[in-house]
Length: 413
Image 1 (cartoon, rainbow, N blue to C red):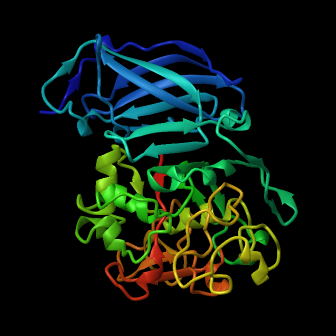
Image 2: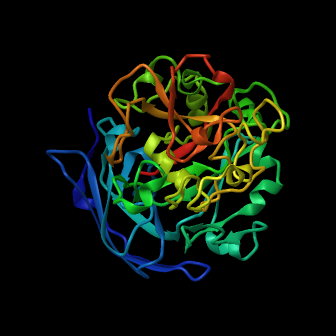
Image 3: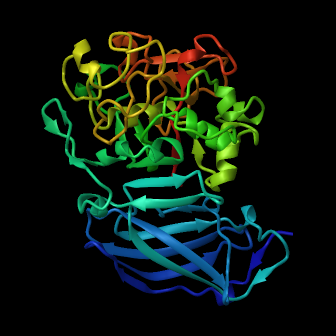
């Protein structure tokens, strides 16, 4: 039996919150209503008021009387992250939660709290269960988290507005026992070569995402796979797509985002409780790499000299040894992401196509034999390390696998 919520007792909650660090936002007119009998989805409508340029996330708590209901992130969609002022809606799907029996919730009530959207997410892999903390821009610029830089990159002379956490490279724990991901806003860009600055956007990403600040390291891999501890901050390499997602259900993208339980991603999801962890799509990867630049590399310079790559990524012209390098040793892009050029090839979710897929939230062909890799590696030249370059390899193949690694993404609902 599916759960039926008795909507006679649905209660909205008016809550006004003035958050710390200057964030002001108010939620009002909260109304929850189930679509019963034609659907069991629950619509939670609310009005958000605040400054137009404020980035607001919504924390939702629901109860049946005094009993708090378990509402995992994957059961919620709609206006939760990066919400703009105005009339908004969150949709709860109780059928994917534990409430799938004949239970009737007669005193369902919901509380919505606005918070400042975090800039970084930190997941501690050394704790059981894992713990997650967030870094806001206000805390960062008040020096709570160490060193930071504002607007370090220009694109063809125009400033790319950003604040990045440079102090993240100073603590080895962020490369061994913890995962650090940067919040990337939804947006659009031109997917293609370095001349794209003169063309209209042809890729639109509608969802915010957290993107790994670093490529996954050997020790982070060991933490997740329970294969040892240590301080190896070399980018994880010699790893196949199937190692990361699994050789069974993990190869069913884009029909399904499921992964094998024994794969790295399966173990990471189970360990953290974050079911959205995955590889990026090819579109997400290039969007994150470019960070609002339209140039050959993500430094925003309208040239393509090898000397530019010398400070951005490890490639055949500057490798100190024939191996993957420790992460975070060179300059980040405008969104604070390191090693997007060179070091190791980064696997993407998509099956390979002869040309990049465009449109809204592209997820690649329905099937194929090879998967996309992006970014180049330490034993390739500058051409293969540029933002637009598209490579591929077979999911279980060990051909050139010594240079294959990956970066984590968490796509928000």
